[in-house]
Amino acid sequence: MSRPGLQLQHALLAHVNEISEGDVRKRLSVRNIALLLCFGFYLLIEVVYLFVRFHAQRFDLNLYYNTATRILAGDIPFQDFPLEYPPFALIPIIIPGILSHIFRSNFETYTAWFVIQNIVFGLLSGFFIFKTTVLSKQKAVYKYFILVALALPIFLFRFDPFPAFLTSVFIYYLSRKPVLSGFMLASSIAAKLYTIIFVPIILLFFWVNRAFKPFFSFLMGGFIVVLIMFLAYLLTPGHVLFDFLGYHSSRGIHIESLSGGILLFLNWANLIGLDVLHNYGAFHLATQSSQSVLAAITIVTPLAFIALSALIFKSFQIEKRNRKSISVLWLSKAFVAQLVLFLLLNKVFSPQYLIWLLPVIPFCGKRIFLIFSAIVMLTVIIFPGEYHHLVAKHIGLILILNLRNVLLIWLLIESIANLFPTARRSPRPFTA
Image 1: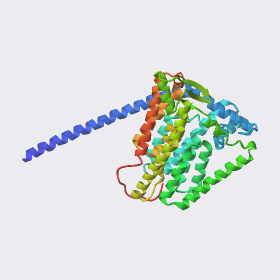
Image 2: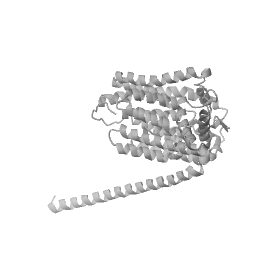
Image 3: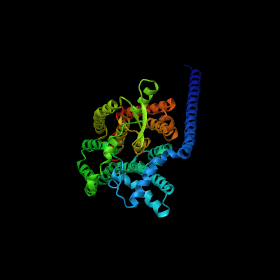
Image 4: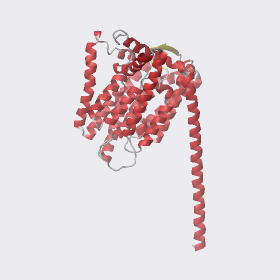
C-alpha cells in the first residue's frame, strides 16, 4: 500500500478509536449518573423511613429496654423472666441500659444510647475489615460503609451489629491470634447462634492448610466460652439457660422467608388459603400445607449444607493447589455462600439477618456487592417501609418480597461461582 494510503488508514483507525472511546465514556458516565441518582433517591426514602416508620421498630426496642430494666432491677434472665435470645445477646442489650440509667432512665434515652452503641460497633467492624484486607483496603471499607448506609433503618435498631462485629474480629485474628479468634467466634455463637454454621468450614480451612497447631489454639479460645456457658448453665436454677432454643424451634413460616413469599403469591393467585398470624413477636403464615413445608425445610436444609460444604472443600483443594494455601479472604467468600444458603432455607427471615453478611460481602467482587446492595434496599422498602402492606397481602409488596428472594438465589449462585474462578493465579503465602 502507498504511503498516502497508509496515512489515510491510520487516520481512519484513530478516528474510530476516538469515537468508540467517547461512546464508552458516555455510557459509563450515564450509567454512573443513573446509579448515583438511584442511590440518592433511595437515601431520601431511607431518611423518611427512619423517622416516619420508627413505630415499626418499637416492639424490639421495647423488648430490649424492658429486659435491661429488669436486669438492672435485680431480676435474673431465663429464671425470673423468659428470654428469646442466647446469653451473650445480653451484652448489647444491657450496655445502653446502664448508660441510660446513669443519665436519665427512660425509653428515649435507652434508644439513643442503643443507636450510638450500634454506630460504634459499625465503625469497629469497618476498622477490622480494613485491617483484614491485604490489597484494595479502601475498596473493601468503602463497600462496607455503603452497605451500612443502605441498611441504616435496620442496622441502628437491632443488636445484630454486635455479633457482626465479633465476626469481623474473629476473621481478622484467625491467622494471627487463633486463640482470640476462637474466643470471638464462640462469643458470636453465644450471642446469635448463626455463626455456628461456619464451624465445619473452618475445620476444613485448617485441615487443607495443614495448620494443626493454630487449629488447637483456635479450639482453646472457643473452649473458654463453652466453659463460661456451662458454668452459667449449672448456676442457673432449673437449668433454663437454653430454653430459648425451644422458642425458636416452635416458630412457624415467617412471612418474609423464601417459602413465605411463595405461599403469599400462591394465595394471591387463589391457589391456596392462607392466614397471617402474629405470634412469637413476628408475623407468620398459617396454611393447610404449613407442616409439609416445614418438614421439607427440615429435610432439605442439612442435605443442602452437606452439598455446599463439599463444593467449598473442592474449592479449597483447587485454591491450595494454585496458591499453596487458603487465605482468610478466600474463607470469607465461603462464609458468604453459607450465610446466603442459611437465609434462603431458614423458616424465619427477619430483615436484620442481612447485617450478618456485612463483615464478609466487602471481600467479594463488584457483582456480588451490587446484588447484595439491591437486596438490602428492597428489604428496607419491605421493612420498615411498607410492612403493613405486606401483612395485608398486597400484591405489590408480595412481588417486591419475591424479587428480593430471587436476588438472594442469584447471590447464592454468584457466591458459589466466586469460589471457582477460571483464571489461574500465582502462589502467595498463608496470610490474611
